[in-house]
Structures are given as structure tokens and as C-alpha cells.
Image (cartoon, rainbow over all chains, first blue to last red; front, side):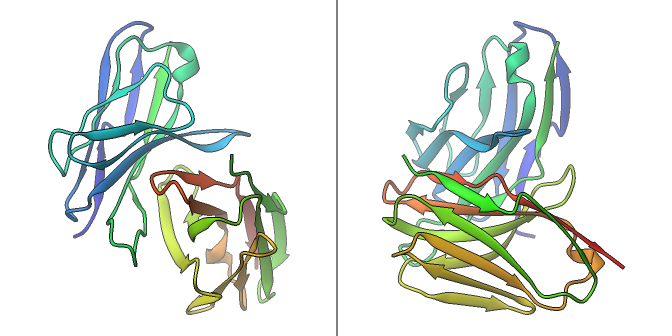
Length: 114
Length: 112
């Protein structure tokens, strides 16, 4: 089944403790990206990657890191999480064919930083 | 920067009604527009994708239109059902192809 898989689905952590949220897709998509969703603010893009070893900032990159060493994986790293990073996070992927860039989303990771 | 607005923010209707959800955007230089459905606590499910060269797309009871010149897209839902209750989001891929801009969504409730 074609899908985008995020892990973990739920995470509670303490301020300053480094964490990684993994994202993997099995559709051989070139493009991957991360979003956070907050009440009243909607979905905002954190980082995106057009291909392996190519990443770029979205609207809210502060406090986050990403890497794209393999085509299928795009982990989101929080080096020193803070309470304002409590949010619902989504990973997405899409092909990079000029005629089709339909985005597919993972099920989300609900992160709480205390 | 692209701004995406969805009106109304919430909508409650009886079963069977035909609905129109609206999405407006400030920069007409878009590559495509995608409509999603989000159920509470769940991920986003793609409903329809319209390329910038297209005027509309249809899937079952759903029809999405795109008017770039006026900066608007509409999602038409025919004969609504309680199972259509969810939040509907529109997202635009702009001329900077890596960027995807979302509206804040319309929360739809269809009651029996």
C-alpha cells in the first residue's frame, strides 16, 4: 500500500531533550516536506526537500533541522525542544512530475513538550 | 507571500443539501491547487488536484473549480451526507514549487 509513515504518533517529552520524528514514504517520491498544525494558525510549512541532499526552509524553520540522505526518509529533528513546539506535525510527499505534484500526507505526530 | 483564505470557517447543514466551500488566494501565479479532507485527530486525505491550466475537476459527488484570474477556487459537494462531516482544506503550490500554502479550513457538519 502506498503510504507516508510517521513515527511516533504520540510523544511527550521534556524541554531540551533532543528528539527525532521519522518520516518514510514508499512511493519513490522526490519531494518531501514537514508541517505543523496549530489551532487558529492552520498548517504551516517547516522544511521541504526537492530531492536527496536538497533541503530548504519553509515558513517556520526555527528550532528544527532536517536531513535527506535517502529518497524515502525525511526525519525532523528538534535539537532542544521547547513548549512552543507543542503541536501536531505532518510529513508529506509528492512526485515531482510537471503534470502531477499531488501531495500525500502521513497520519501525524502529536508532540507535547513540557 | 501567498495568503489563502477559506470561507466560511464553519458550516452546519442538514443531510441532502448541496454545498459550496470557498478558497481565495492573493497571488494568481499558482502551479496547482489541492483540496483535502481532515477528520478529527487524523491526517489529510487528498480529494482533488487542479492544475493551473485546468478549470475544474470532478470525483463522485465532489467538483472543484479554479479561477486564477479572480483568485478563487470552490469545492462543490452534492447531496451531502453525515459521513462528509470533516474539515476541508485547500492548499496552493506556488511558483516556488517547493512551497505549499494552506488555508485554515472549513469545518463542515452534516446532520441527519
